Image (cartoon, rainbow, N blue to C red):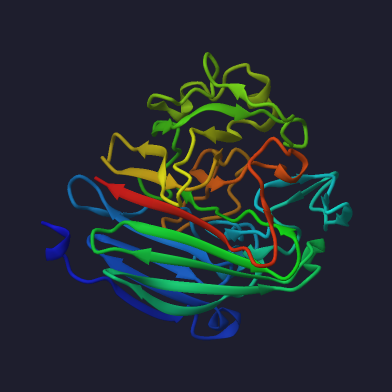
Amino acid sequence: MTTQELRPVRVSHAPLEHGGAGAAIERWTLTGGAIEVTVLTLGATLHTARVPDRTGALAQVLLASDELTQILGPARHFGATVGRYANRIADSLITLDGREYRLAPTGPGVTLHGGPVGFADRMWAAEEVVDGDRAGVRLHLHSPDGDQGFPGALDAWVSYLLDPAGELAIEYRAVTTRPTVVNLTNHAYVNLAGEGSGDVLGHLLTVDADQYTPTDERQIPYGAYESVAGTPFDFTTARPIGSQIHQDHPQLKAVGGYDHNFVLRPRPGDGSVARAALLTDPVSGRSLEVLTTEPGLQVYTANSFAGAVCGAAGVPYGPYAGVALETQHHPDSPHHPEYPGTELRPGQEFHSTTLLRFSW
């Protein structure tokens, strides 16, 4: 069946709950081809994705909870838009034009995912958007000057656009009133066998990166890129995630698995995307290809999960229940001028695109 023969994308929305605190959260549903995804206005969250396997059987392939107490608690980053600065900034400090700005810390010597009350914790305003044969939802957030210590009033938009063949685009934009730093990503956890089906250690992963950024005890990069060749971080050809995850390697032992930024091969530079990763579940036949304009990819294998969240299958999520493939600029870029820059100034527009291309 060609794209022209597929039905147009359908978009609808309703409250997450019909009473109580959940009534303020909208759930948007996008249906295109054989795929259905949902988006929550809390955290501009990619909440669920239903995808067929090779036999046509549908499964929900993102780790998620429908319980409001979990969405507001241990699952608050599941699928959320993370910012103002995704990943870590050392010493909770940035310097712009010679002036220091103290950021709200999330732990000793670090600010993670934009601070204690980051973009994942905010209610975003939503509206339906149509772009050619793609349709979906555009969400907007205003972050005031000084929010979590970051300078500049920032307006951020994230659009989830589905096409008739089921390809999902995540498009980010932001503008600021003062010089600031911006790094936005999506924090979805994927299990292509279906959420609650077990771990992803048997999934095959390819990452288009010849280098990565090893980190210290705070998970702050040392600075220099290191080659993945001959290490457990070499995913330049497809291999199971679990094939070397328990090796006696100091970077793996420090965090109990993978939670590292990969330096992607050079992007086109003209705003077009290039492949970052390919994830495949050999049992179901489902695959996810990730394409992006971003220079980095954080691979996190849910090492610290301890059963605090249950999904629709009723199975507590343990270690390695899913894998996050977070397209991003590199962690702690404000302290590393040799990394691609994350500064945004008045009159400029931050723009980033990530495509999630499912197949089966």
